[in-house]
Length: 274
Image 1 (cartoon, rainbow, N blue to C red):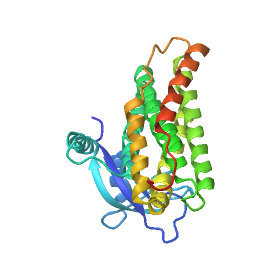
Image 2 (image 1 turned 45 degrees about the horizontal axis):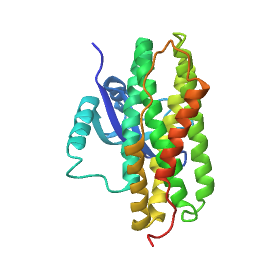
Image 3 (image 1 turned 30 degrees about the horizontal axis):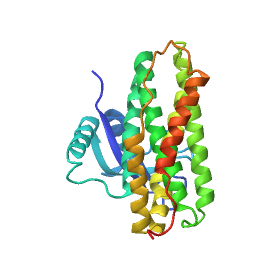
Image 4 (image 1 turned 135 degrees about the vertical axis):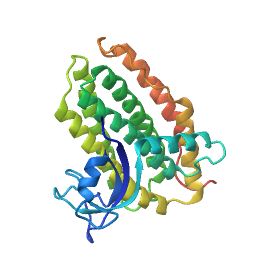
């Protein structure tokens, strides 16, 4: 019988934590969590291998702990009530999308363990679509242009974030190419997941905090409007036939034209409403 998976929101207790693991989310088996908590005081657990970028175990505070089923149910309720309480802040919207992305990562991790190539083909395409809309369009085409000149060290931060995006997408495309030949590249999958989780921690714990403090209500409203335009215009790429050849040059050109159209509609300039 498989162990129940749990979703943990944590905060690093190291007094000088500066390696982008100081707060975030982890998903693990309940048994592993009990093992990591066994020798710690109540509400504290040792970080699992790979969670801290320094490479050794830290003490993490468990801010909240939920079973995956409870978290999914909570997410469903949140979606059901979306019409009553819509997310009216662009940074909150991006953080919530990170939660959705991490749930897909849990699916992928399970499918790698069971060696389910067909399921991986579907879930990795779902991840690619989420990352495309979230990272390439909402962040790079809406948020980043709007914050230009308004966020201290913004250009350098944006450059780093974009590099993260390219790295994750490159690894993801490599994984999907291998799936066409019935291969699961465990090392590449692991690298992709580690890079993606690290990137999300970096954005949630540092980058978004800085952006949120630097933008006024007017600019945030324009950013949110642009993100909603992306949601309306974005058309996910279908799973397709795993055995079929990748997109032809003509199909790729057509897709690029569609993406350009979305970018034009979503584009906004920074500055005040007037």
